[in-house]
Image (cartoon, rainbow, N blue to C red):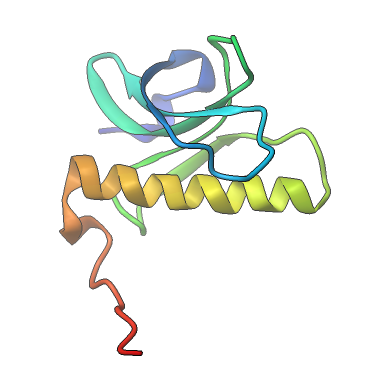
Length: 107
């Protein structure tokens, strides 16, 4: 898929995901472009407009769309959380080979 043609306005909500940061007001969803799941997006409550999304095929081939409105630590947490949600998307829709070998602690 050509991810360069995807814009925030083209994304539709799919399945809802658990909150990625405690005290989060925004909602996280898997997102679709047409009929195809393409990544994850962050939506304001009760909104159909995506404000921040990560779309792509793998950890190495992805694109971030939009921005998160603040420049504080909460913003960094939201982006980090969305990256974790993107890993869930890759595992769920693209398979484990899209994210490489998972590190497991032996402790």
